[in-house]
Length: 284
Image (cartoon, rainbow, N blue to C red; front, top):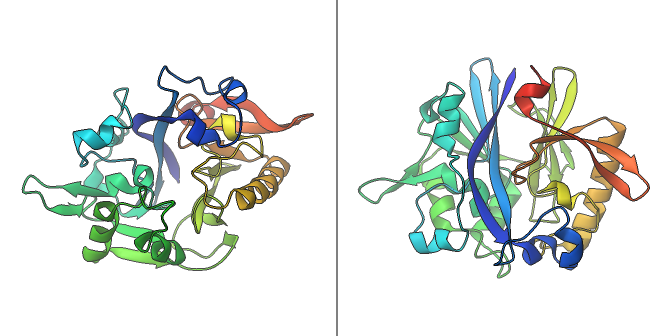
């Protein structure tokens, strides 16, 4: 097995929304805001190469939305999914499986492209798309709070393509899946978000997705305003981080543009980052 960090692009989100009830004077120590009160975010995917399977975990925002849409998110930097795949020696047509932690647009927008004729079609034409069954039901009948994050143009074409497959089970830990990793389920951010747990070269790595979007969210009570069940997130983070420290887990950060792979440590203030690494350098 080999792992590759795939940078799908950078954007910005409102810092207050990203930290909920936590005062700005506290969260801006780790996530400084610009003049519009926005903080810098990444869409960092993980590519898992295992025998004849090439599995892409999440896809970033994609590029099919309107200029007005992207104007809300102030895209920055030069990263793109295709460039990052190419830099690692791959092409999107080689992807065999797309594993979606959940269906918010910044995680699945790149799963579907818009053709020059305006048709919506799978961006990875040879891949199977994997989604948790309960989350799919949640996303296609969105609540008012999440409706703006579940965009039909990102979701329904996956089903219409005939390439959608479901993962089932209530977890929190799912094993015996058709992947070289297991899955940890969490429900605070959205129903049945899936966090891959990968045993790699003697290390335990978890793709942190939106349970811990940035290093600044490691304190258990630093919870996004986007979370549908914040008290559930609080409980989930407490359990998750305690287990992660005990098992010397490395967190692969999807949304933190400055921290890619981090180790953890116990401090008098709680569990915090110990060291920050690049995936390639750590396993070189």
